[in-house]
Image (cartoon, rainbow, N blue to C red; front, side, top):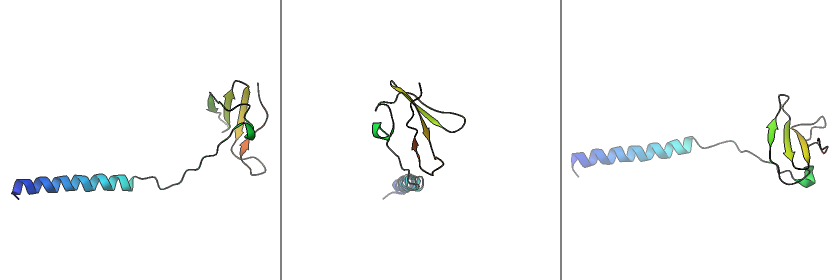
Length: 87
């Protein structure tokens, strides 16, 4: 192997190792959990079009059948949707 080919090989291997390490080190270490809410959990219907969070931290979901407020944590310590529908 010539000196030029050897340098090319070293540069290529360095690039491969750097790309592999950057993917490994940048991987997400936290697990994110999701909760699914539907009609059984208080939504007026399955399809939600607008979603917005207000300045108090409540998340509002809009459907064709009404507006629903999501409360991250209630006084009882449970999470969920208020079953009230706002118009």
